[in-house]
Amino acid sequence: MVEKDIGYEEKLVVVKVLKALNKFYSLRDLEQVLDIPFQNLWKYINLIGMPSDEVAENLLEKFSKLKIVDEILSSESKKAKNTPQYIASNIGFLELYVVKIGRELRKRDIDVVVALSYNAIPFATLLSIEVDSDMCIPISNEHLATETVKSLTYFSHSLKRVEMLIYPRYCMKEGKKVFLTDVLLADIDKVESVNSLIKSREGEVEGLATVYITREVLERISQFNIKTVYYLDVI
Image (cartoon, rainbow, N blue to C red; front, side):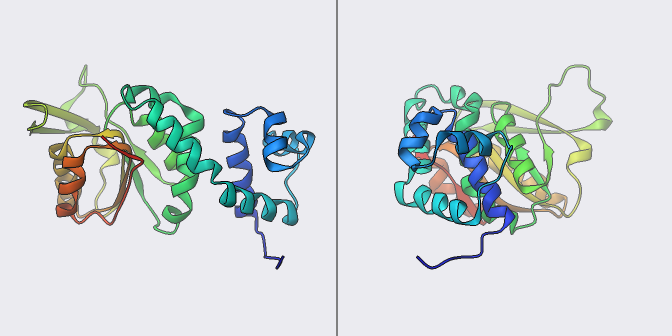
């Protein structure tokens, strides 16, 4: 095996994946799957020790070969397909999804991660931490001073009614690189409304990630020139 230079970032990825996997597998099960003593896994997961270069490289190769992350993402997303709101609180699942897309997104210098729904807030939170960006989340319209918020009102053809999204004005700054997140993206009109707001602020939508996306949205989203769209299931 040819040795590679394993940096701190790669080791951190290993630890993050192990911590998330531990929400689905016991340490004894991981010991069997990864052929690493459970005592060592416990140290890595609890940040008592970091894996050596050799161990980190070995684990990265096993993650890739076994496709263990992809299998969990696929299995968990399919289980919650009829109740997508439940996936919003599946932190182990979200952590794995964030690690999967985070390495590429860190190269993009994302300024703001925007949640497109209340259900997307945990996902947006984890992703903003992963890419070291600001975060913008929708808020309730109760007891708000209008000068402190930016409200978006649009007609949703999929829901056949007028919808409203409200964001704090301070998080919609000018000229920012923005990444959008959701759990279920079923409303193309919402995407259009948020995209228009970002463009009006001379910003740019760098990409979008969701767990579920409808076929209609997937077919039409290219019209907004969003650079990258990540999703796990089409519903």
